[in-house]
Each structure stands twice: as structure tokens, then as C-alpha cells.
Amino acid sequence: MTEELMLSGCRRNNAAAQEALYNRFSPRMLGVCYRFAKNREDAEDMLQEGFIKVFTQIHQYRNEGALEGWIRRIVVHTCINILKKNKKFSDSVDITHANKIHVREEMIPSIMQAKQVVECIRALPLGYKTVLNLYAIEGYSHKEIAFLLDIEESTSRSQYTRAKAMLEEILVKKKIIQQSTRKSNFWRAVSPG
Image (cartoon, rainbow, N blue to C red; front, top):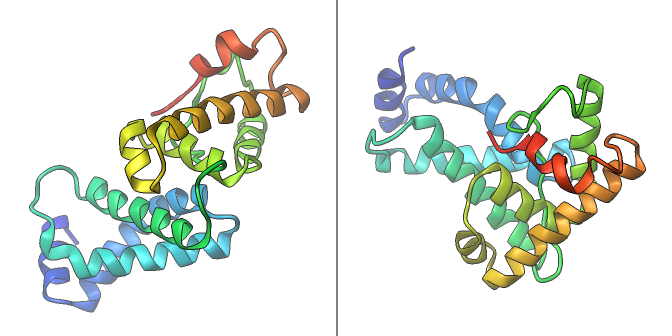
């Protein structure tokens, strides 16, 4: 089914069109949710809530920009809203996004190590993960993050700085990166997509 057919069907609440849209975009959106969630079940719950919002707001999509980007924004905002209901973001925030982290082979030579990096990111405190995810992976500014999380812009900046430092410490401790790689090369090797 083409994107146009899916959209027109979804706007008429056609179940087949909704299923087609969900099947096309849910795997990537689950990855987005998983970065914010503590476990797969929470990520799946976030995904379901996100798609409910997508289907109820589909009439607001104006074919400006990619449909996937529009869906992604809704899903990210849904994840943030769920996290805000359950946790305050003063000293701690959350990230984990494997499919958007590009790793240079000379820095992290194997798929196994890339998975280890993702798991290390998942080990960060909720606040750190969230700010790192929103800033480094999703491309939000600190001002936008502050607005989304109801925190000060300076808190977002400090969360990001602390998240990077803590992640580097974890990666060195687990021997995923070398001490000499740490400050100078790691953040050039792992960059947003």
C-alpha cells in the first residue's frame, strides 16, 4: 500500500490502512521507544500509546516533510510524556539508540562491541540517558530539551556533559574503548546519524 493510500485510509479510520501504517513504521519506532524505556515491555507500551496518538492526530499531517519524521516526533513526545509522569528530571535523565549511532570500525571493531556500547548507554541514569538521547541522537537543542522535560536549559547541558563523562568511564572500565581514546576520539567516532 502506498503512503498516500495509507494516509487517506487512516484519515477515514480504515483498519487495513492503520495496520499497514503500523506495520511499516512500528519496527523503527520501537527502536526509538526502547531508547527511552527500561525494558521491552515498557517500550512496547510507549509504542502503542504513540501510535494511538498518531492515528488520532493523522488529520494534522500536512504532507510537509517525511511522514516517518512526523510519526517519530509524536512517538518521542509520547515517550517523554510517559517518563515525565513517572519521574522528575532534575538530576537525572535517559538515552539508548543503537540504529542511529554510527561507529567507526577503527574505534569499535565489532558488532558485539557496538551492542556493548548501547548497553552501556542503557546503564546510565534516566536523566542522563534521556538528555543524551534527545541531544546527540534525536538532534534536539538544549532549549528544546529543557522545554520538553520541564527543566532548566543549564540542567540539560550539565546532564549531557555528565552523561558523556559517565559513558566514557563505563566504556573504559569495560575495555570497550581505551583510556587514550577517551576524551579525544570517542565522541568523534560515535556521532548522531
